[in-house]
Length: 31
Image 1: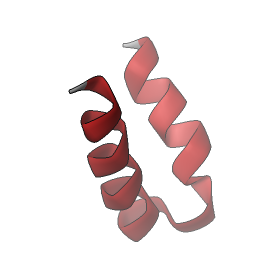
Image 2 (image 1 turned 90 degrees about the vertical axis):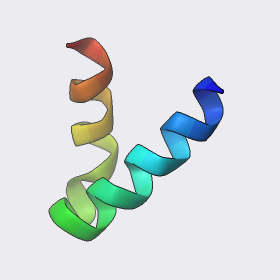
Image 3 (image 1 turned 180 degrees about the vertical axis):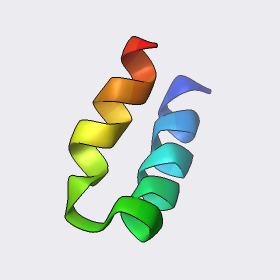
């Protein structure tokens, strides 16, 4: 389940944040 969530977040943040996807994903996980 966690990996599926990561993939969904990554896809969403890639479309929203562009090349900042990885950093944004890590920031969201840290919340």
